[in-house]
Length: 160
Image (cartoon, rainbow, N blue to C red; front, side, top):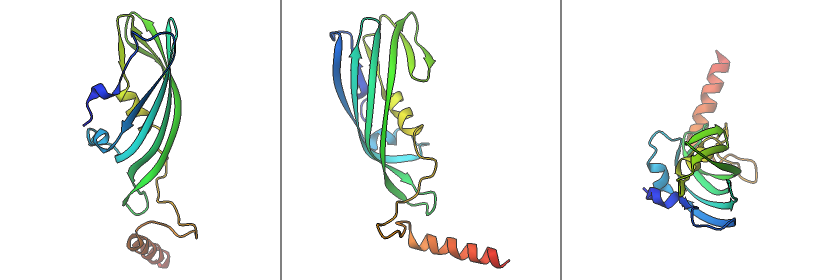
């Protein structure tokens, strides 16, 4: 897997203002999580860090595609994925998650590891229904043999 240091943003020596960072998430990233619905992908994560005196603002822009199983035919396919969010980091005495997108870290911290946040942003924003897209003519890209089996079962069930 990619080294966890690959997802660290060092903020201690930065001046106040905006600082861009870019990260790549590929198959190796998802291999670490055996239980994940996502089995691979190619995603670029752009982070714009806005450093202020007592606050860090991380604007995430996540774009790419993920390899996920189709709910209809059970084959894997590449699903386009886009997501934007902001994570606010305050400084305090302890590490704590105040709200979904607001955390507090100790004053002594010099960097933040965003690995877990990337994982959560991707997995918590997967679509509820994951099916192959259709061709331009409206026909499904799903496995034809599986669709035939499904239709056969539906017809048999209706006859009963």
